[in-house]
Length: 283
Image 1 (spheres, rainbow, N blue to C red):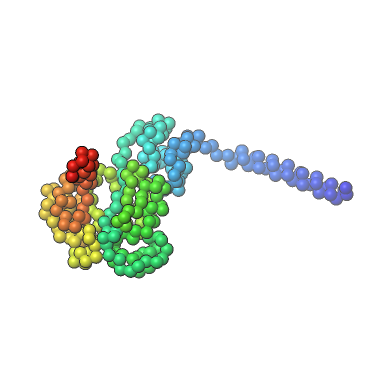
Image 2: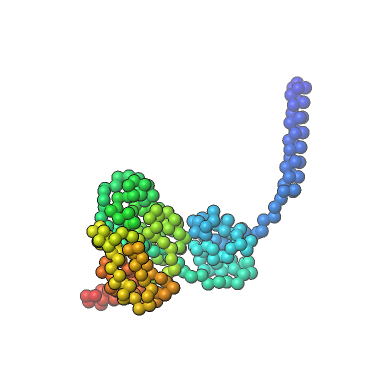
């Protein structure tokens, strides 16, 4: 072996040794202590990285929580037991969080006329870029399953009526469906709101009446019926003031288009129908 090759090997060995020393020193100088609780909190979080907390993912949320910049309730997906463990781990006092759920704010679907047959990309956002989508109502749900694809918990499906339906038992209120909807017709709201308006159209009543079976026609019957002045027609659309609303459902009863949902009344009717079916009697 020539002296040149031997010399080259020696130089490379010395450089490797020096580089190793530099890296070792740098690791000591620039070492940042990581709070071990961050990893513990991250393990307790669901790991869905759904973005419901408004951060990049569960790891980022864990850092915020441990730093005291956010409460464990920042994660809408975290279960009650896991959240309680996080509070205990960090020595924090627990706080009650109000349950939320995704709700549909459009009742159109197959009951809303199509202005054209759509043959484009099966994505709601893409469809609205092409002449505002296939529906005659440009406020309506497009119905191309973008919310279904976005939901990390398989809590939404498209029903026979052409509309997304939320499986309440699976919904974690992460907001992924709300963020992906280009029309804003699906929203996360407190689960206690059992009465809501299932329409987003601001068109005049005569226009809505021609194109949609369930759209608000601004007839104001709900306004007149409400005992606490909690609902008003604003810009051709019924709007509920939940600071006043007592969830009596009277507005839903008088709505001629069934635009207003009364979930408690619907559940009572479903329960009655099931009991009648079990007893072998007509509902």
